[in-house]
Amino acid sequence: MSKKLVFSGVQPTGNLHLGNYLGALKSFVSLQKKMDCLYCVVDLHAITTFQDPKELNLNILETTASFLASGLDAKKSIIFNQSSVSGHAELAWILNCVCRLGWLNRMTQFKDKAGKDKEKASVGLYIYPNLMAADILLYKATHVPVGADQKQHLELSRDIAQKFNNDFKVDNFFPLPEPLIQKNISRIMSLRDGTKKMSKSEDSDYSRINLKDSADEIVKKIKKAKTDTNPITDNIKDYEKRPEAFNLLSIYSDLSEQEIQKTITEFAGKNFSYFKNQLSEKLVETISPIGSNIAKLLNDKKHLEDVLKKGREKANIIAEENLKKIREIVGFV
Ligand code: AMP
Ligand code: TRP
Image (tube, rainbow, N blue to C red; front, side, top):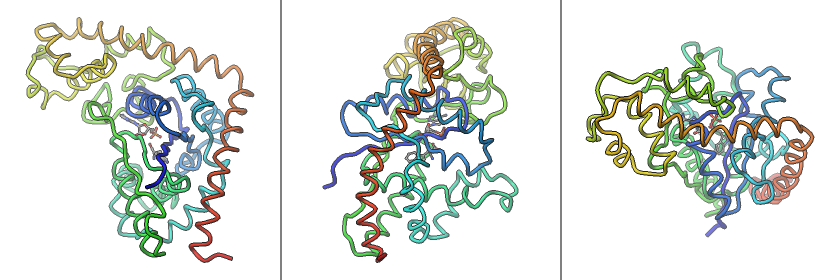
């Protein structure tokens, strides 16, 4: 049995939003109380689509600030950025040679991100999942908290780990990493379209609540959030065809740490404007302190750089120890 170890990553590609918080960051924070954890700002993943260097630099610090503002503690968890530990790129190369073309061809995120003109996508975007497998396996991590959109990538990481262990006849060398996906709310949807996930890349800022949004912005966005003309009912089945209403009710439930059934019973018969006021209040209560903390932390870039540097040193020790063994297994001299 491998020692329990948590690894997860977030791309520094812009403002973090409520989906990142409820789908990932919130569980990062609760896990750090129970297990050893590594949390990584995955800047090598970010450049699979072009990033302006100045913006990337700032986004790495801002993502670090968002980790800390959400409650991660650099004394408890190892917080670092991916490009500072060269082992990620080295192991990714080895795993590129383990992973099969057919496996990558099934990845839906590549299809979504590459769009219609696949020929123009970077090669990095195509082999993105292998780098993700390398992130996890470099530390022999056993548990990976992610949003539901990353489930397929996690399954691929397990297949790659298994094939490496088989090919090189090293039973259980890499543990098969387990995804930790929130049960009640694993995918926060856009506030404009309940069938699309909330994302950094959607054009309209009204589609998401950013961690840095002011209380006024949060209230305005919830007021404008799409709903439907039906009242709130207390039969969960009614929401199968009402994705926007279901999304808002799920967000409220998650913020209140209660089951969705309790929420719909609480609001049954009320109209959406009443419900939206209550939801805004909950959101402001949770998100505003995080936003102001991010702003505060960004005033001291030196401190953020220092957190990353210390994290890098700790991560690199584990990475180098594992890489030494991996190089031996592969047969490098
Ligand atoms: P990314 O911003 O793509 O690097 O995602 C960072 C983490 O947030 C990953 O674990 C994602 O699965 C999670 N995440 C991103 N968007 C959402 C969403 N709309 N709902 C739930 N989790 C999400
Ligand atoms: N691909 C993940 C995302 O877009 C980010 C990520 C990179 C990650 N490496 C990882 C998540 C390793 C978990 C573990 O959300």
